[in-house]
Amino acid sequence: MSTNELAQHQRPNNRAAHTLRPIQITYDGLSRVDGSGRFAFGPPTGPSALASLSGPIEVRLAAEHPSQATFEVLLRPLAGVPAVEAKALAAVVRGALAPGLILTKNPRTLVQLVVQILVPFQGQELGKGVMREGEAQRDGITVAAINAGTLALLNAGSVPMCGVVCAVAVGRREVDGVVVVDPEDGEEMSARGCFAWLIGGGENRIVWMKWSPGKVEGKGKGKGKGDEEAMEEARVLSRAAASEVWEAMMGSVDTMGKAGVPYIFGDGRGDKDVRGGDPEKDDDHENGDDAKMEI
Image 1 (cartoon, helix red, strand yellow):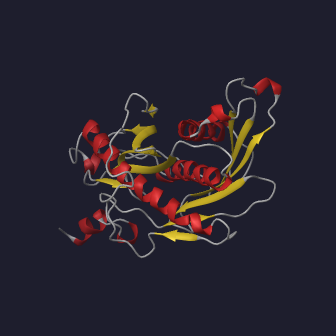
Image 2 (tube, helix red, strand yellow):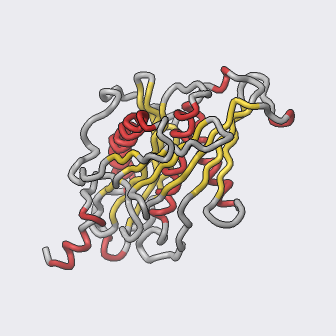
C-alpha cells in the first residue's frame, strides 16, 4: 500500500475504525432548573450540547394530558433563532428519549427539556459519490443532543425512567467500505446513520435510528458491503459503542455534585475497541418492531 493510500485509510488522530473519540461529560449545576448536563465527543472541537430539565411542573391547559405527563423538547442553535432544522432535531431528541421515561407517573404535568447546541452547523455542499460535507458533524450534533438530554434527566432524578438512552453515529467509509463508529468531518462516507439504544431493565433495544445509504461511486465503487449488510454491521457496532457511552455516563455520576468539573472517558485509550463488553451482558432484546427508523 502506497503512502497516499495509507493516509486515505487513516482516521483523524490515528483512531481505529471501532474506537470512539474521548467523551467529556460535565454537570454545570445550572440555576432555576431541576437538572442539567453537557456532553461532547472529542472536545474541544467535536460536537457538543448542553441540556437542562425542568419538571414535573405545571402545564398549559392546552397541552395537558389526563393520563401522563407532557414531554416537551426545545432546541436552540448556537446562533440565531430556532428554525425548521432546530425543530426537526428537537422532534428527533424527543422521539429518542421518550421510550426511556415513565410519564404515566406524573399525569397533568409538564417535563420540559431545553437543549443548547454548542457548535455551529457547517456547510452542506454535495460531493460526488460521498455524503454531504458537514453531515458527520450533523450526526454528531444529533447524538450529542440526545446524550446531553439523558444526562439532564439523570442529574434531575425527578422523572421516573425505565432505562438510559445512549446514542452514537456510525458510517461506511467511502474509500474502502469499512464501517466505522463516530465519524468526523473530513472522513468521506458512502453511508451513515445514528442509533439510539435504551439500556436498562435487563434489555438493550433500539428506540430510534436513522440510516442514509447514499451512493457508492468514484474511488469507493464496489468496495465494502451492500447497504443492508452495512446497516446490520452498523447496528451491531452501534450497540457496542452505545455501551461505551453508557459506561461513561455511569462513571460520571460521582461528579454530579461538582459543578463544572469535567469527566473524561476514553482519554488515552485510543486502542480501546467498542466491539468488546456490554453493560447488560449481551441480553439481546433488540425489538426491531419498536424501533423508530428513518431512511
